[in-house]
Image (cartoon, rainbow, N blue to C red; front, side, top):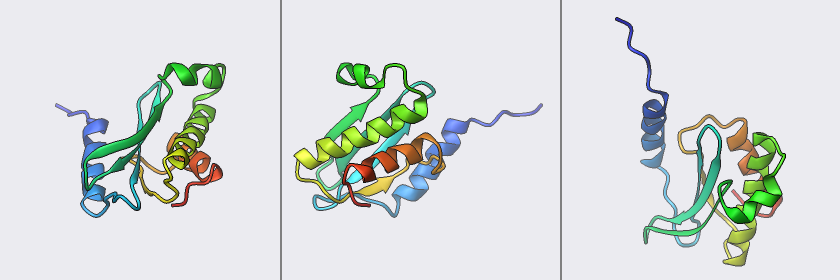
Length: 122
């Protein structure tokens, strides 16, 4: 019998492996990306306190007008810009990028590009 790979479980292993060496501090919090099949989310987390400083996702009612009629790639870029703007409002300029175990391409890369374009440094 052939066992099918659980891709999300494998992603979780990759994420855990990276998280051993990656942590967000108060001066440089962690920008985390999570993507599902239909949505994408980003959070900025201070790991020393265990607090989410700001977050953004395609499911928010405030984002519905901005992402309407856009492709998933374009939505990811908008989410990156929005999370960067929310971070700037809280005086956060530098972050550590945590790709969440995903390959740095496609929507994950677009979130990073959008955040960089809006002024975040990582």
